[in-house]
Image 1 (tube, rainbow, N blue to C red):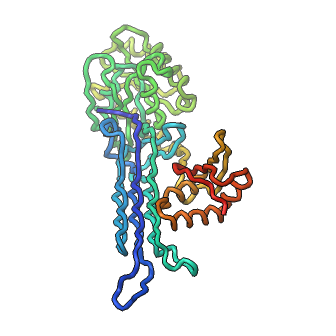
Image 2 (image 1 turned 30 degrees about the vertical axis):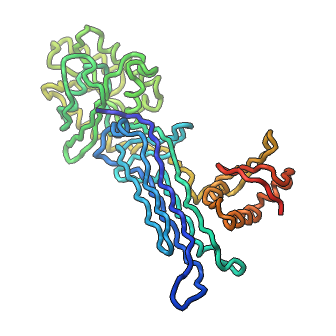
Image 3 (image 1 turned 90 degrees about the vertical axis):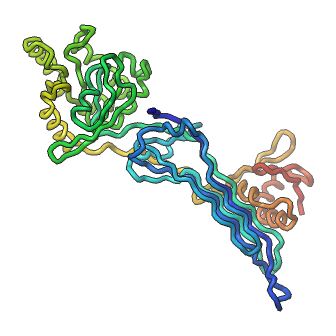
Length: 421
């Protein structure tokens, strides 16, 4: 089943907590701290794979979690959690589900992107020794998980896109020039999902996409128009396939202008892409009528090719022109790629707000992480946290805003009573 959009939640693994431990060696009565570090949580990594054609897997499972890192035990480091490597079709855009901001555009086979970074393992007590504190009796908790809810949107990548009204013969054409084998039947809307095929012609190969038939109003979403039109965005050349002998006896030239108008209303950039016209079913139209029809299309602008996808007539000149065009055209420009926040680019600053109830709210991504990794049931760990907040300037800022003894201070998920020592 073809699916080109999905909303999925991804979570990296939490880091394991460090341990509190001391040397217990024979003949060493005063062994120092040797508590080990916790294991690192698993990452969530996305990779583009040309073997994947659909996002259907994410309809079945819409939440993925990497494994947590293990806690350290004594002087033995915790094991790292196993990460997740998820394959996505080439051409998948990953966007922040809440803001619509582009995170990564997976355009190249094998392209990887770490979406959620696994939490760092907490430090063992051996990291907290200094000239004053020679036997620390606390360790650090593991770094919290990182979660992302993203919208996956697949835009098929093909050099050539076949567009036109339903039943124009696009599916027959792609099956005639490539190894793609779409289901073909004698009724409108034969194709309801895009099909890809690889064409080999005179030592040149290219990918062609058979787009589902467009109808009037497609640019507004009529007939699933937006889902179909977005796949055209990746094509460098468009082939407008025209049914020369429509079953409803409509005018082929009028039909052509309807679809061209939909392309223009959807995207001016797409409308300006190089275009070829393929007048299909020439084998069933009387010679005189066909010559008159072809004359009308020659005056339209794009090069016109008379073909019969069913019998194979006229396909070689069309393919030759496609290859000539592709060799002259540059690749489509890459979309901008934005990286999600990670520890390396997490902002250092913080703000303090006075709440209506008299309490104080401290905001800052790095500060919130420091608090989350502190063992708040250990007095020594809390004292160490107090010292860090003092060095960073949080305590001075609270005093400046009028914080007094016993006032509530919230950082992240934790609420404390302010103690001014």
